Amino acid sequence: MSPPAHAAHAGTQILTLTGLCFDANLGILDHERSSPQPIRVDADLNQGTQPLQPHDDDISHVLDYRKVRQIIIDECTAEHVNLLESLIGKLALRLLRLPGVIGVRVRIAKLEIFDDCEVAIRIESGQW
Image 1: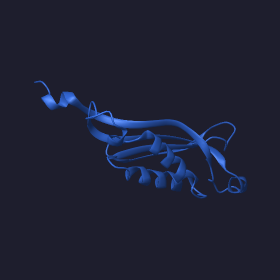
Image 2: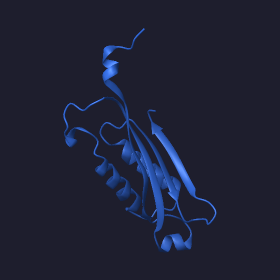
Image 3: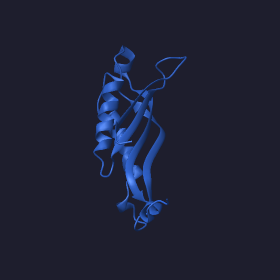
């Protein structure tokens, strides 16, 4: 049995930002409270079933990854946050509010907390 004709013209679309690095005010230790530290954010945004090609070649009809990138930076640098778990939850909620986003996977890594390993939290919410 072959798939419906419309299935050949659509697919699940996921916008991915990988390796976004910047400094954030995050942590409970004295040195973390006094100065920002480098973090890396990876994010997958599930946009569900989308046409294989947008109906036109206009950025206003798709999720603009430049805006997603800026939202991630803004949410992670807006204020000091004690816990990585608090920050990732705040970011996931903000990304889930973007038009057309039905699910998010976010990973935030603290890059310099230990000399021998990276510490990260990953959260998945919405539809996958």
